[in-house]
Length: 201
Image (cartoon, rainbow, N blue to C red; front, top):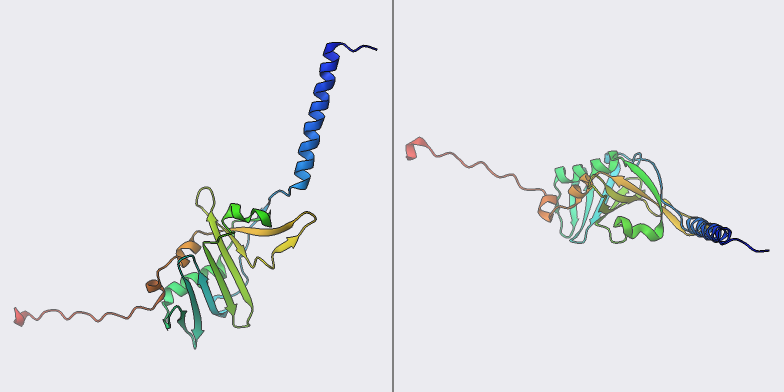
């Protein structure tokens, strides 16, 4: 039985296409895709519950503690803390929300700048409950920052590899933590300069 050249060509094309489809489906099934969900609150605690926190950036590590209602810088040096700087960050942590939530393979964290974080914030509540927020890189239009909230609690092993949750949070977090030490410390109130008396002229 002989086949016409056109018939052989069609058979070859069909086999080739079948191979491409098989390879694509196999590859997709073995590589978990990023899934996306609507966002929500980052944490479920009140600003007043925070007893201490640390801020780690590539430039510095700072620690703070609430002593009898007054925030104090503990590291790198002991000093009264700036109420405004502390309140700004704690308010973001207590009330901040994520725009979207992504479920990604743990091996892909570098794509979100989370393998070398821009900042890590560790919080301890008055109940001794601890929380962590890790900040990565900005998204494509700089409208949000990739982050992880309590990553150990939000990582789940799958059949293929571990997966973890990545949030998109406000870039205000970057502004809140990227401060020089001087802005974290309470500044003494400057005394008003006495005006010159007319008699002295």
